[in-house]
Image 1 (spheres, rainbow, N blue to C red):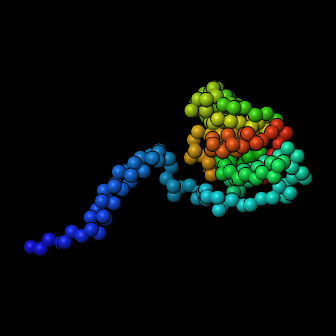
Image 2 (image 1 turned 120 degrees about the horizontal axis):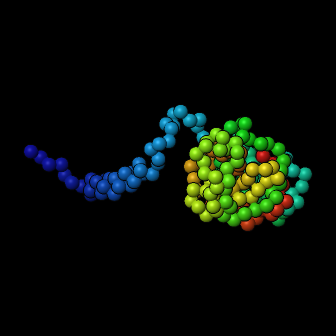
Image 3 (image 1 turned 90 degrees about the horizontal axis):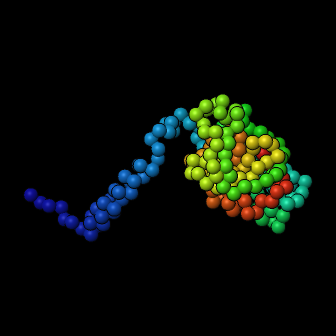
Length: 197
């Protein structure tokens, strides 16, 4: 009986496989088991290459104190600052066209660690929703920052549930990763023009 010769190559391949096994096992636990099967969902492109580049001049007459454009199709939020700053962020968008408000608005106030009170229509859709969640609570769907629009109950805000970004996942608001909304919050002023497209 002959034994296969153990070469340096075989040893390296075996070591790499042994090192990779725990990472593969951990990766399998990283995704929730109770999500619907992916084949029943509409495919979503979540990388920056799927964003449609926008120009502020196509949507606003002037920059003033700043402009925000929420593009529902590419699920991206564009920001133009009065100093020439331009930022592009992936976002979540409303779950359905019925919940989507389109048109022009503006930022009327800002809050760090905002509290959340579901609207009457949200509670009608889901009676199990709590009456209120304090700011800073990890279950608060507004995340760490919120910018309120002139339309009642419409906001640009963060989220602790990062799975929502790049999806139709909100009840009308535009959601961002917390680190992105914190960056944007520092730049956006009350009076910033907003368009939901």
